[in-house]
Image 1 (cartoon, rainbow, N blue to C red):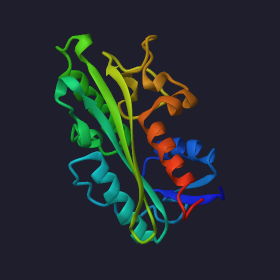
Image 2 (cartoon, one colour; image 1 turned 120 degrees about the vertical axis):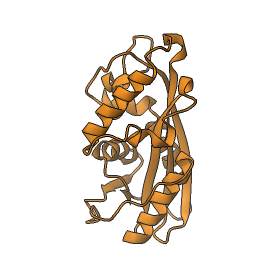
Image 3 (cartoon, rainbow, N blue to C red; image 1 turned 90 degrees about the vertical axis):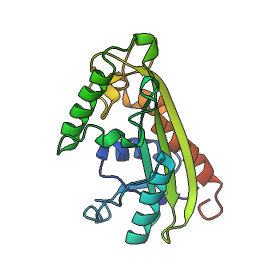
Length: 209
């Protein structure tokens, strides 16, 4: 496959890094909005009722704005004991904080508070990631979804992650997503699954192969 440039429409550098590591193996060159001089473009309103709808909104609107192929994702945490919340509101669930770090901290504190009286065997949860790749004209090329199953711990652990990663317990050794190495996380995570599925679709896409 020829090397193909894809712009990832997110202001989160951690997401760009995760996607870049995976897609590079498949011959794609991943660029951030800043790399292409589009870092100041206002973010579109993510008012969809599903992760897939929000990913589509971001990918198509950014693609038309910069006239380039754009990959966007919408992802979040669904906790069974909370009826699937925070869901599409994951990033701004608490409504507190200006910086990404402040919002993450406030969201994690709210999650622990909501689950304070919930037994460990009822704290099951999953991360969901929906991805959409748009052509420069805003037409959808491909869409994929990935999930990452685990449970919510009682205290934050680990530094190799963001968002709810420090609370998301992922295996029998009780490690959190933030305690996994970058490779381990890419191999198992919702974003890794959605990205690999996207790469496989694109490997046989007539306009890119």
